[in-house]
Length: 248
Image (cartoon, rainbow, N blue to C red):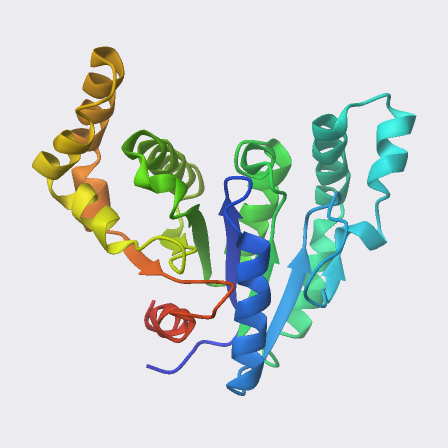
């Protein structure tokens, strides 16, 4: 299937999941493969980006100045910066529309604090503006070693479900760091309730019962997901990942 030019991929994930490192790898891979990509950074608190951003919120809004001016803590300043940027995001959309025929992918990096983007009014506004102009997918990046704990896995799944139903967009689950821990056992956990229950044997009764119940409820959700495993550090699985994006 040919790639539709101007496809947008919004990367979200829990802090430490490695989404910025994954974005760096995706940019390098697509360029090496002769596929053009355009990158937008929406994290005002990022210190050093490992990729070259075409549009960077930090060029417009000084995160530390916002913190000082409004007497805010770090998270409050990030949210306020996002709100300010959202009010002029129509200009970003206009720039991207002008370049839609030049680029196959538009990658959007979001703040490390997932709730600041996925649960804020500004995050929803930005997502809706993007989705109204481009074919858009949410790439939900997960820390595979952390998710070996079924309760942490379930926390990520609940976040992914919330992103799906809040955005109404296609969500791709991306298990990152498979060079440290494999993601295949996690796929079995998600599809086999008996294996999942066995993994919960050492958890407290209340925690075990709740996590098990949530897993049963989400079985239908799992069936309709695109799931890939990658290593942002080593590059493992990136080619297959891009093939999945091409087939969406």
